[in-house]
Amino acid sequence: MSAPLWHSVRVPPRKHTPAVRRNRFNSLISYPLSRPVPPSTKKRPASSAAKSSSVAAARGKVKAKRPVRTTLWENVKSIAGALVIFLFIRTFFIEAFRIPSGSMIPALLVGDWLFVNKLVYGPHIPFTNINLPGYSDPKRGEVVVFVSPYQPDEAAIGNDPTPTLVKRLVGTPGDTLYMRDGLLYLNGIAQRQGFAAANNERGNPNEVSELFDWQKRIALAQSRFGPAPAQPTHDNWGPLVVPSDHYFMMGDNRYCSKDSRYWGIVPRENVRGRPMFVYYSYRPGDEPQVVCSYETSDRAVPFITDVRWGRIGTRIR
Image (cartoon, rainbow, N blue to C red; front, top):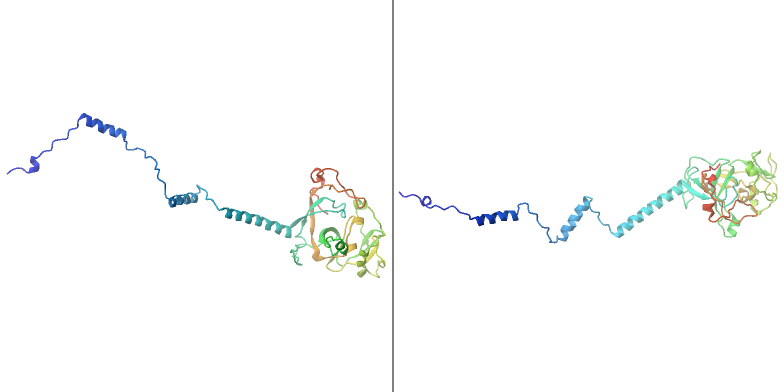
């Protein structure tokens, strides 16, 4: 029996010449396994790029650009929110006031800036006749901020007939008030002012004004304090009884103060707050006054160059 064909055919071993071996060795050197791949110059599709940007923005690597309209709206909302907070605080808690006249010298000076507590007597809701409850009632002797009763003489010359004023509360409901020779009496007891107020400028004690005529409606014709004069004057008027829910206000600088003697008693709903302290003060650069004079400055830009540093932080009493 003859042997199988595959047993009889022998494939000779492949021989490599030195040249072939050298070429293969050179190929391994020229093209190593860890050969770096050159960057691709092909552009990625727009959808792929947008997706990559979104992912990067989500990871916090790239900040997404917001439209200008969105940014503007965010700024408007921030400003509006701050304005609402400011108006809320100003209406219900604290408001700043400036003293324009010398009616309260020496307690308050022209050029004083005050913070007023509006919560103490109950804040007033703007554009309404509603007053919210406070945690205290106005007391005799306190300095009070209020809206003045109607002043026809101011309306006649085009001024605000109901300005916001600051005076001292001298009479509460049920009190009997009168003045003799410039000295105020409360329920028959003389109310002498302090030494500083006693040095204030004096005016005409016999001044007569038609603005005093309102007193005749509530003046007492007969009382244990004597009858009221037929014609009230600056230094002699009353006795009169303060009605319920009303207050009698007067300035500390009696001869330079237009107060309840002129425009009447103040309703409770007109009360707005109580001054707390002076947060800024300077000598104004006004022309010196002949009547009812007060401190003035001859310096340029007096609100910076003529500051009353000693009054800053002064509590109002």
